[in-house]
Image (cartoon, rainbow, N blue to C red):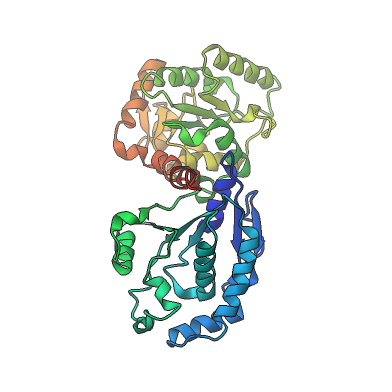
Amino acid sequence: MACWELAAAANRTPGWQGILVTGTPSSPNDQGFNRICIPEMAPDNPIKRDIFEAFRRGVKHPAIEAVAEDLKSQLDAILQPTDLLISFNCFSLPYNLPLTVALWKITQERHDFAHVTWSWDIAAVEEEYPWTLRFDWPWSLFWNTCPRVIYAASTGPVANLQAQILGIEPSMIRVINGGVDPSRCLRLSSRIAGICRSRNLFGAFPLLYMPAKISSRKDIPRAIDVLAELRSQYRNAHLVIAGSLSPHDVSTSQKAHSLRETISAFGLSDAVTILGSEPSFNGKTDFLDSMSMMALSDGLLFTSRREGFLFPILEAGLHSIPIFAPALDAVVSWAGDYSIMYPPSSSPREISRVVGEAFKDPASKRKFLFRTEYTWDRVFARYFSDIR
């Protein structure tokens, strides 16, 4: 998974083209990058399995060098000058010895590309492998540094262990954490994932969601006023409104237009998103879109003047995020014990204070941290984009 996520992140980075070289053919996970399939790299390739089983017995398989030369020839044709090659676990796990040999050789022979080998697991400490032969080729590749290779590890402890095995200073191994894909992890609908990218919702905090149709009783203008006040405390606050047009009221289209004009007049066009008004939604959000927003958001905001249909509040309760709602009788009767209530007569400024206070706890930023600091795009930009 990590390899194709990183290839996709590279492909989204200006000036880069992500290419995944693997033993498996294309899959639904491919996200715009090119995939080149080399069968000898496949996990279930027969010759690869035979070579690994021989390794486990402490025997050098006679086909290692031939397979390595074939892999080297194919990689040599793929690699272009100034390319950045990132290999995963190839110098720390012995599952594909010919590939390790091929990478070692091509890195020594060519000096026109950069090679980072990223280790997530270290097999050299596993007693099940015959490391008594570690001074022999190609076992020695796991115990000696490869010239011109930039070593990286997923965590500090893995880096320290690999440095100990290689006999080098830990500072010579870069610590590069793995990443997460918020869209995939939160199972966002394709439309919500698209809006997150185009509107930079991942970078908003707090990100509030209002699961309301365009309706007068939902008092959406009041919610916009709350967001305007909240921006004085949190300049990256963002409000997403479901904003489906009511099938019972043809005037909601005009109301939606008026809301967009109000948002623009307040200078909040970058801070408020009405999903139903986005071209991809065509006036309607569905259940999956709403669940995606609840999974993504830091909190739910309701500003209704009256309320009776409380399913959105109950659904929001499953996502363990703050629910800000007016203390209307119907809301209190169903959700009073697990919602943050404010008096129905509260002004937008007073409501914003209630909301702002809830996000002063550092733990409330956990979701924001992981959807921004640990994305694959951030990992690539921070650790790889300047290497080549």
